[in-house]
Image (cartoon, rainbow, N blue to C red; front, side, top):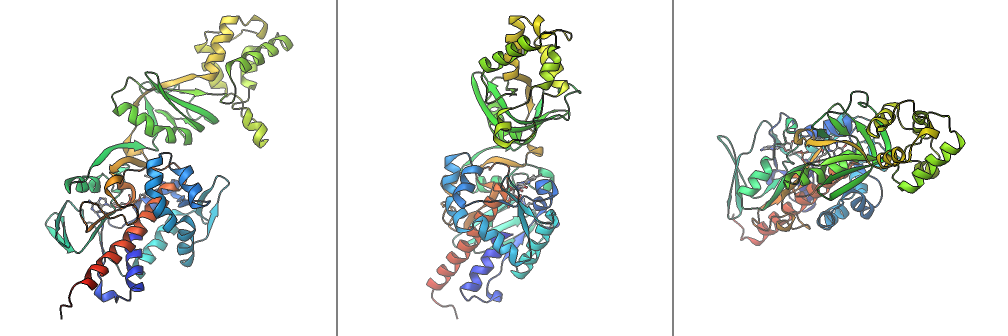
Length: 437
Ligand SMILES: Cc1cc2nc3c(=O)[nH]c(=O)nc-3n(C[C@H](O)[C@H](O)[C@H](O)COP(=O)(O)OP(=O)(O)OC[C@H]3O[C@@H](n4cnc5c(N)ncnc54)[C@H](O)[C@@H]3O)c2cc1C
């Protein structure tokens, strides 16, 4: 949608009358923008606050991705996006964590204004048209959707990734680019929940742990993310899990041994500090039940010092799980806690196993990682280095951002650049040709 809008803007800036330049948006759904409507849980976290450098560094953990996106994000930044949407009446709010939402909290408002922008761009939207084949000629491209055929001077492929297929994204564009000769990095889920072989104990389901560390491990390889974790009836979810899911999916795809997930309830503390804490509690409150002490322990306590927020103490169901795994009877008091038991408990507080991953579901992933190789797309124009009349933008490219508005911003920025540059190149080529009339 943004590519069509910027293409028209560029054409008008070059003095090209609308009638002389046809922009056609082929969409397999009844309407474009299905993902905008469901984004941010229906609230649409459309971008992230801060300057472009900060946005890239917080949103894209892979240096290769940042390098590729740098130009587009500077050229059409979050500020440019908000200015453009602001002209169409969108008011936004930036939350403390930098996420930007429409002030109304309604994703539908963003979609509706994008539809108005699209209307103003005089692009012809052809809905319910699923592209299934491309043919490249010299200076032309033919797009097929079943029996239907569309011919143009350039094609901007903006058909998204391969996750959340029910919204219309089943990796078609990635396959079309591959058929056109592009190298494609394996498509994997990112920003997804993790489903376990054995579902979590029902008592743990629904519990959210704040600002803990979630750890994935497979045969000595491990990765970790800090943030909130939500225990679901199939495994885990929540921001730390979504961020970790990409590397879990990649470990699983590499055929590595089972990937186990554990949680560190005290990320800022080592085992000696926790041991000292328990010994101190035993000295001061020998007759107190261990269970009571555990239930009063604040999760991720160093966050307290930073923010002064009230502590989240270890939830009861987790206290039971810790004691069960440490093989400590329910009625044990602090003075009766043996050294071995204390050691087992401390190591569990630092690494409480939650489960072994059965699946990272692609159809529940907010984005897919992998896609069209970044090496084969010019980051300044989004033009294919293989076909001069092909441009690629958005999630079908081999990048995936974190949760926080980064993925929409990357799609907007790359789409905007693709529209501008495809139009510029077309009219440059046309003006270099001898006049036809
Ligand atoms: C549940 C959910 C919530 C999300 N929330 C956020 C959020 O709050 N903030 C954020 O930054 N990101 C969010 N994302 C990610 C974000 O929506 C995507 O990264 C972004 O929309 C990608 O933009 P795109 O233009 O590349 O592709 P898409 O928005 O996926 O658009 C691709 C379009 O191409 C169409 N299409 C596909 N194949 C064909 C074909 N063969 N022929 C014709 N048309 C085709 C599709 O129907 C679709 O309309 C969320 C994703 C999901 C699934």
